[in-house]
Image (cartoon, rainbow, N blue to C red; front, top):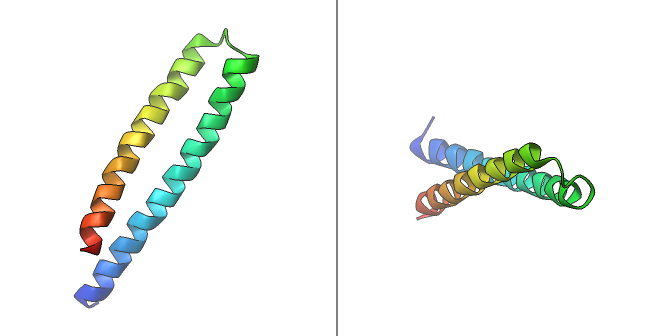
Length: 72
């Protein structure tokens, strides 16, 4: 496989990971909103979701940086 195809393939992989991560974040944000309104006593679960969201946002930021570097 040529270097160009490898580069495009990796770029497409990163793009797909960004899309999947955004979807996961959106789903968890909806779940968190629901819990805060309907189940505010679920403190451990809410904290777990917040921690997961923080990790996903960090991962998304890293993926975006990689994607931008690959496009240059």
